[in-house]
Image (cartoon, rainbow, N blue to C red):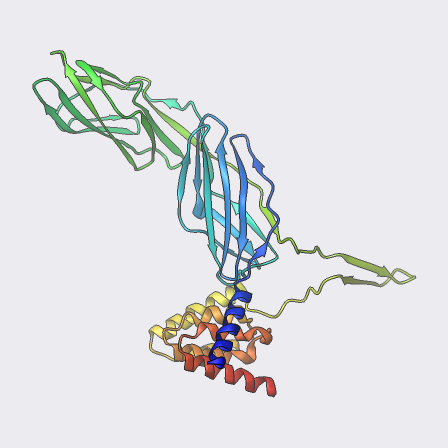
Length: 374
């Protein structure tokens, strides 16, 4: 019983150590002509980075944020958050939540990394008006006005009212938006009731609305004058954001010259040598080759061994590659093989956690214990 309790205690301590969060200095707010960006959270673990910010549209147009185009840059690699597109109208605010899952060569809980906020765009009012004509309401009637297409998808006539459903499709250029303002349309032939106010439409998308009309006996038609327009989208350029942990220390170089000035020696206050590792290109190649060899029913561990003979790898990359294998036994075999090529062997116990079965975990731990005795 005591042995079990102690084991659980050490597992809990180990888990806490590897999931320990890093504290970061909050980036300064960013202000552009169209919007402000205020950061509310920067957090990192070994497996993910979390960056949240509140954005406010301070101009009179439409702010568009495509979350998946935000890049986190670290260790010569980059990772992106999940997809998400946000439309923020004038005067409105929105909190954007970003989670970046760590993937080699990017390392988790780094002391320093960068964020590049691409995918921030703006469509400014007023747009370019479109020349219009009246649409005579009839079943399945279709009308094209510039890059807009209007179609009557439903038309029902009742004793005291008529019901009209209209589908508006915009097929303009990708760097433009269509805009329809239903408060400006004029319906002739009766007293109309329209519950919607209109909206912007991305290229290739549609907007559907309905009109209830108390008819007066004259021809029923819709006048689009001043109700539809095209907005040009511009990119908002934001400088790369440098994010540092609260314990990060800049390198301080100290130079000393000989009396004749012919020699210069340089020292730093921090150790700058990094453990040898696969480059991003080499890592990606090896990962793809392992997958191909597995799918072909070959010997991926032997193939990886040949690849690593003239290279070196770090523990984080080993752990990432272990995840490519389908079988736990193959993960164990790969971990044992890659050990001698690993530059940061004191961290190799991290590979144990990538195995699923207790027996295999014990086998790798025993293997590592034997290697330390050599």
